[in-house]
Length: 172
Image (cartoon, rainbow, N blue to C red; front, side):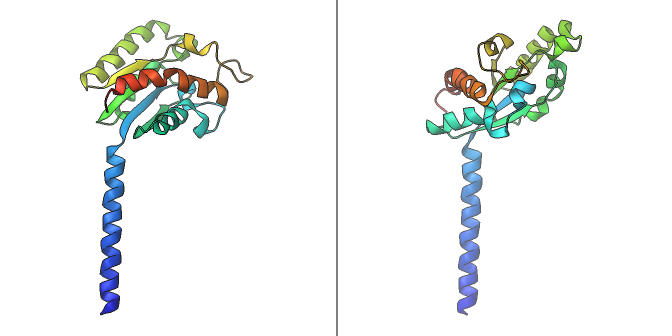
């Protein structure tokens, strides 16, 4: 009889712990970093890319956030527009990094329209958008390829946009 009671107690505690962890996960505010290789963190470990570093900075300030890295190396704004399903319902903020792949792939004429369409579709879903243009990357430390940031560069980028993200989150 004691084994049955003990088994029920363990089961009850396991259920409570599962419910608490689901509640904690649901309580996190979702931020999606949508972009190309600078978002993905080409050439560095996933934890060194700016989305992971931004999440750590915001959590250190007591924000319950989850920053999803939806960056794909070589992606274009057209590809990003087709990947908006990577932005889950309930997302508070999207950090859009259109990159320079449209130009490299001969699709520069599509870039402005695609960026506007992405911003419009996200705004229609009630999602705030912060757009990172290429110019902000020039003064940051780069890897030898001259295009992608070092871990320190990604840290500096996360620090540079942290205030914008906090402002977009408001009182959340």
